[in-house]
Length: 466
Image (cartoon, rainbow, N blue to C red; front, side):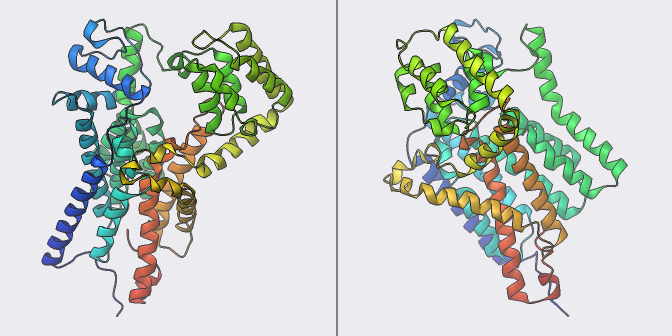
């Protein structure tokens, strides 16, 4: 008689495991808070302004909170994160309170996801907690007063509900809808969590019942967005937010960027410098980061004209029109390259990019960790390969299904980011995918180790751990 992987441990072992996990969470959370001061960016300032308006005047506005003007605005993201900030700032205005609060939420979500999936040995859960909380790809984000940390926590909570559904072979619709609604209120791009949420329902129910249940989940999860749209129309705003309005930039240079950019260096060198009106810095634009369909002589001339603009001056309409004509010419002369090749190159580069911003904050450890940026890029590629390995028939159906769900989320999010209409080419926008990818790769390794340890039919089939 073969031994199947165990899902229960003796009481003493479970108590020790819980204590070890709690100690890990406390120690790593303290490390994340103390690595450096809170990181405040222009986006952070915007979130803080909106949160103060919510706290002081119960309105979503980018106006000066002290003026109580409350001019309606969409903001750059849904109001979930500003509401969180408003709640925390009732305790004090020190940004470190925000950091501590979002790190605590992140670590609790990581612990919930780690223990949701059944395990064959207590060491596995400890390893899951350790990696999810102290991952080199996400550890440094806790100190940024930005949406990323809470968005990762919401993603982990959503996948915890999904993993529980795969194990129980039924979906708790209220829990799944609530997790999705919270995630989608933190960032607009979290709408892509609907893909794995709908897919898991399709896996577990007959077609007709699955369609009904999926429609219920999508409807409930979308109610906050519907409420935001109704509020926007009532207050004279567009029914949906637009990037152009938020950036407050001439439209044609943005259209050129969305058409020609291959990686995030174009965003930082051309778009952000033009938006900040620090035009001299545009000279640093690397033309290799633009599509090969861009006429090099023409774009060199345009970049030179931008770099000669007086610092702090408005971007000239005539120059903006020239960028628009160049973008139109590229689309008309190279439609396939613009619509197909450019997004494919973007998808490769966004995953392979050595993103220094993700590591800001490591200077509390002496800054030496930044020497390992290339290794972190290789680690991201390793996670992608691990997701592919999880789809192999050698593994049991539950684990393969989780591999499909994680892959759907990763692929959907990547396609969304690199699409020409959006063009969000910064690697940091992938950070929400990292924890669930790491969990999936860990589960693959746990299954292989369990198979080697037990050498049983049940383990060899690798249906464990779900």
